[in-house]
Image (cartoon, rainbow, N blue to C red; front, side, top):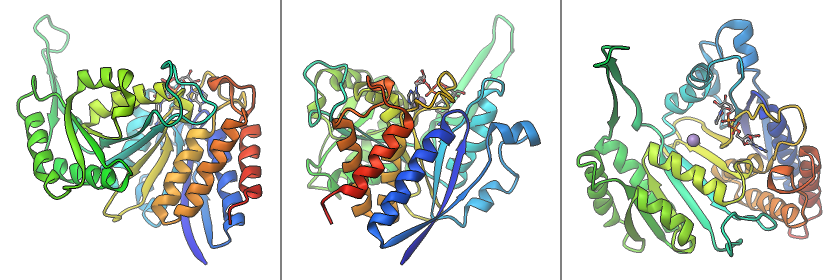
Length: 358
Ligand code: NAD
Ligand code: MN
């Protein structure tokens, strides 16, 4: 029997609610499949841990995670702890410490869920956004001179390295190649930004030579927002910088119906370290404890995790179950339903148990 060691970090707000639902679905898949086992260890890191200890996780936190095959992450953020502490204290040290440079964000309209775009339904919008997750505009380099004075200057430096851009471009071309339409759109802003962005365009053209069966094009990020709204069918796989993809994927989430259905995987493609799987949304304290958090993003990222671990059949079964339950109208209020997190989780587990496919 194949056994995978999973580190669950539910953390803050609705994180524990959606991770509990995700683990429930994973257990149902384990029982149904019979071929693999998940050995889950849950960590109590996050804002409560911070209030008790002054840190979001222990000093050797990432060291403790190294032994795992994957990390299943909820969300961070609390009303009484500054966001830069929750983010830089837990999520980012994991992403950066484990060099999870490929952030993969699939978006599609699930059956039963309405896109705000008229006449756009399941099948019309099926994208994967690949976000560069290790450098670019979020390098953390910059500074402020003459702080508070009228002549104050702030700089925010974007760093693009040949190694960093080449590896994300290869990842994106390979992913595009694995999808039926073999279509890749490379997003930049190389008309206005003449250095790092022009390098992106050049490296894209170089890497493209190794993937002759992939059809690719270039878009400026501003024009890209228009194309996503006006012509969603023309897009498939998309690669963009840390900042551009951050913005485009929030738009993508909204076009697919709700942030509550949008998943993300922080991948170390070289598999030197565990990769991390999480819903895109945050801790949502406005709905924490009400039992109405949408667990679909978490189910979807659990499917990405199974895929990464080498269990594509279980991943596909989970997504079929999610699609069936959405199509049946068992949905939380953010996507127009009346179901609770628990109803949706129970229905997904039931669909996994009852499915007629071996
Ligand atoms: P948020 O994603 O937590 O919530 C935005 C809105 O979407 C809220 O109205 C919320 O109720 C709704 N929503 C989010 N997830 C939902 C779900 N699963 N089901 C139903 N509705 C859902 O973003 P925010 O309100 O800007 O931030 C709240 C906290 O989360 C902040 O502290 C922020 O820093 C943090 N945050 C963390 C992450 C992360 O952990 N990866 C991501 C984004 C924000
Ligand atoms: Mn974002």
